Amino acid sequence: MPVKPDEGPTSSRISTGLTKEEKAALTLPIELKQILVGLLLGDLNAQKQKDNHNARMRFGQGAIHKEYLLHLYELFKAYCATKPVAFNTLPHKVTGVNYSCVSFNTLSLGCFNELYDLFYLSGIKIVPANIFDLLTPLGLAYWISDDGFFSKSNKIVKLCTDSFLESDVDLLIQVLENKFNLECRKEKRGKGFRIVIKNKSLGTLRELVCPHLHSSMLYKLGL
Image 1: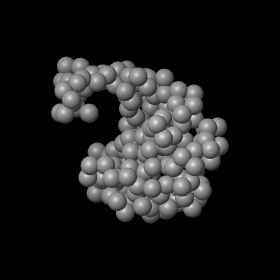
Image 2: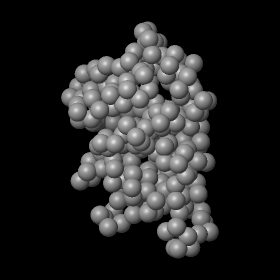
Image 3: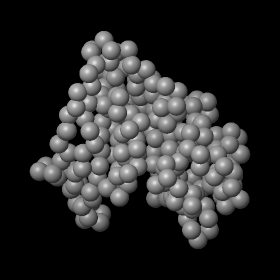
Image 4: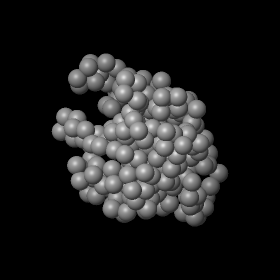
């Protein structure tokens, strides 16, 4: 979302206490990598200033999800030099509404380059060809937390994959069905497609991801 020039996020800098060499040596534990895979299927942005620079991760949520955003910060604060900041967006181009958001960035680090290279092609986010191997129940939980919602009327879970190509959406459905035994279909939404996890698979989905969901996100599974 665009930010008001006079109300943009102002960094609350902290000291990482790490030398340049220590930053270069940082690695991602497998659990954090799995979480990032799920978040990158959602709204998480990986960014590079130049092709030969290291990547950073930019996390953001509406202020209503501040508790969840702070949970993410606790997971990744070892990779950050700034604390989360609140800001207001410019009026939305359709609704005209200003939104309150909370965000934080990681440092630009070599340990993020692999995921950037997998999820971005010429600066455009894509679904990696090896997403079957990358996506785990832990990653799925954070994907749903970031980009899923629960329909109370028919007890289905939808994933907002509108920004991906239809072929990428088809690939994700194959993973959900063949790896996690979830019955899915795609649903046309504007120029894109969303993934619908059918009602009959809700129990299976809950068993898979509930152990990994932050308590503030249980409502996304109707709990």
